[in-house]
Amino acid sequence: MSDSTDRQDMGPDALLAALDTLGIPAAITTEDGGIIGLGRTWREFAALDETAGGMAWDRLVPASHLDALRAWLTRMPCEGEAPALECPLAHASGAMRWHQLGKRLVASGEAVRWLCYATDIGALKRRETRLNDEASLQAKMLDVSVDCIKLIAPDGCLLHINKAGCLALGVSAEESVGKRWSSLLPEEIRASAEASLADAMAGRTSRFPGRSVSDAMGEQFWDNLLTPVLDEDGGTRSVLCVSREVTAEHRAVQTLRENEERLAMAAKVGGLGIWDYDIAGDRLHCDASWYRIMGRDPSDTIQTIAEFRPLIHPEDVDRATDVGRTASDLLAEDLDYSITFRVVRPNGDIRWVRSLAYLEQKEGRAVRAVGFVADITDAWRGELALRDANRALEEEKTSLARKVLEDPLTGISNRRHLDSELARVWVHANETAQPLSVGMIDVDRFKQFNDRYGHLAGDAALKRIAKALQGVARRTDLVARYGGEEFAFVLAGTADPTVTMDRFLDAVAGLAIPHEDSPTGRLSISGGVVVSLSVTESPKHLIQASDEALYEAKLGGRDRFVVRVLPGP
Image (cartoon, rainbow, N blue to C red; front, side, top):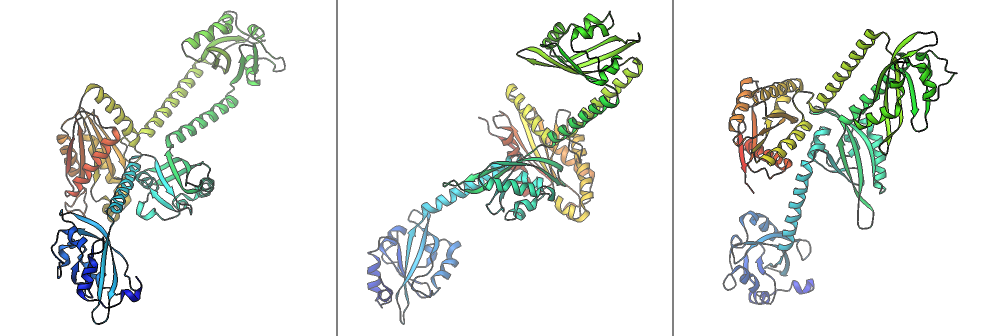
């Protein structure tokens, strides 16, 4: 129908008769949006009688959409057709069904008339809702991961970042999404990040080491894996960056490197003699320090066990050179080679030496031994030095283990320890059919506290709260810092965590840490606990469910806790 035809004046009866021929809901309205009449399809859709002339729109659409509808009905477009409007319409069943409304000018002059028609878009709306729900579910699933997950657009800007990523970078999703990804990273690794991103954009998987520093987690090290997300044509439409924390591994490698450097220095400065013996070929190679300890000239080489035997004290020679039996015994007991024996120098001087080695095996047989010898004739000094070295090594190993499992700020368990211990307790609860309670605690209005009193005061408050929670927990309970101002706890064998939660709230209240921005005038905590009687839920689900219970406690006014008992199988 042309505009000229649309704009011909038509009488009300003719317009209404034309409506009944349309197969979709339609109406004739006045210039101010009033209803002159509804077509047959609309009347049947809404179960109305006759033409429904003069009916009010509030019988046809929900109140929430009336203002938008009236504004759309009275808007006079430049052309004959107005922009479409999405709006739910009342159905005969009482339900509201989504339609897209359009209108055209069908009569003009002194009396403006509009043809208003509706197209069912319910299926599209349901699909849109489902897609939004799926996107929300995917985002929640990503937030459960302890790995930092980012989705990067082809222009290098951030499309999505999960909760762990926000925590590691010290940003929020709202302030970081849309920014260039590399700008959120420490300056010293941005060049590596950009190079890896370029490789991923070109369709190649890449990786680079990273580092981050935040108030909540301190210094952390990361292994960043960038994977291209391809479209149907094989082009890169985005890049998925998964950053896995490797702080413990990084520090362990660094400690190992330092120990190797110490060993090399000790061998050079302390006079250790290095030797390498090919067991199958009976070939011995020793460095200059080894010859010095034996009192021999390095130019007069010792290349076989038979050549080495005359250097050994007669009482020790068989024990020190029975390589085949010694190697078999050590492999059977899964031990490295270690032996103390005497050597006789050409001038008759007798020296005690200790030889240590690593056995290399192939197909269950020792084929090579690499080690060093040390002159320990000054027994008391040598023994004391060895004890001190062993003590220092044990202290270093203990310190490293503590740092891996301990939160550096508060001194209580960290999230890594929590995950490990929760997995262990969860398995035990499944095997013994015992109940398990898992909870989350959040310090109320902690951001306002930091803003008013400063981060140093905030750190001091977190330390005191951590100590208070730890102090009232049972020896079998685990309390850990989850991140930021959040704490988590695991109560093994507990079906009623109410008493423990009361102790937690009372302990923090007893600290009486002033907080002028809190209704209580002090720092308080909120808690959420889930009780699993059958322990069918995974550890991740228990943490997520306790976080939801915590959110409910905060909505309920804070300074309180919510306990949820999960349904059985």
